[in-house]
Length: 119
Image (cartoon, rainbow, N blue to C red):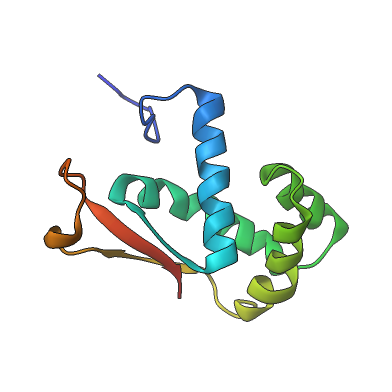
């Protein structure tokens, strides 16, 4: 039983899961919409929304926190604090939207896919 076990493991060790989330978050920040599996989109949502919440207030501490979460990627940190964060300065949360893709567009292995994009 998985009592009190939050999150999906994706059959990966912790370091690979973290790398997966960072990679998905980087793609979402750069392209502002991505297509991935439904489970990965649901795991990505809280990760990216916490980054955007920090990006709303441009302080040195917030920049360092976001930089450490994203693996010291200066391009991503700059975009969060200059383009994406100010866009949601007055919004109290819910910066992303997950839209399920039609069944006909799913992969041949039957996994459910979805779009995740900024609102």
